[in-house]
Length: 143
Image (cartoon, rainbow, N blue to C red; front, side, top):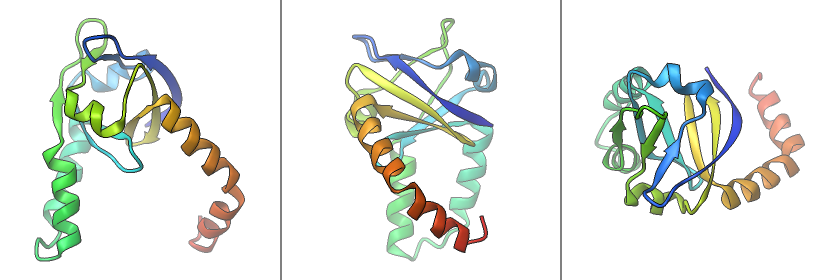
């Protein structure tokens, strides 16, 4: 399970260090793709296979399902961490998430999310400002 928030910098070559806490779980590889809310999603190979299995079970006749599948799969890149626990994020992924120099990596249970620091700060402040409203809606859903 991935939890926590970590700040790391991208270097001039687009390399990003994965937090040491997560590296053992990612030794088998990592898949990074377009996420939601202007971030990237990063999955272990096992979690990626499970997501792919669920998505392949969706009907391709529905436009929104096709669009979401395209978003997730066309942007995906698989990586192996280098000896220093880094990956080189390709330009298309950096551009999609608006990643500049400073990045925030957050653990969200079965995935990591990679955010531009400024984007994360804005999103996080908005989310915290609405926490009571969000909690009430989740309470209605039994959480």
